[in-house]
Length: 89
Image 1 (cartoon, rainbow, N blue to C red):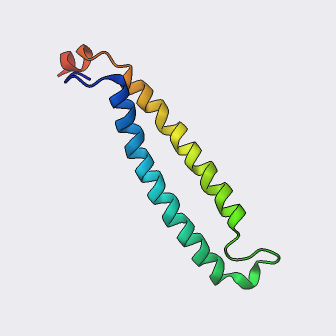
Image 2: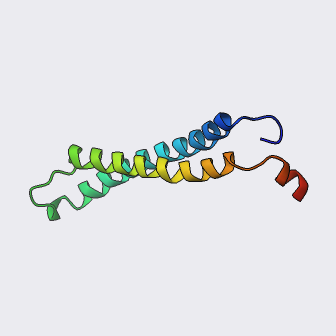
């Protein structure tokens, strides 16, 4: 913000970065969970290895939680007065 960025840009910057990390994490987690479920398929009774409703709900909840968790630091970063960090340096 000290170099001319507005609040919207700071929000987009933080949320975009966390969105990419969340998307990659959810994708890797889904692949690993399906792989682990196929390995222990004999222990799962009444549940398929790729239970799509369960995987979808879990991915959705994790995605929303990550966006809320990244919104709070973005709001704090956008609320900083640009003069204060420059004076601290």
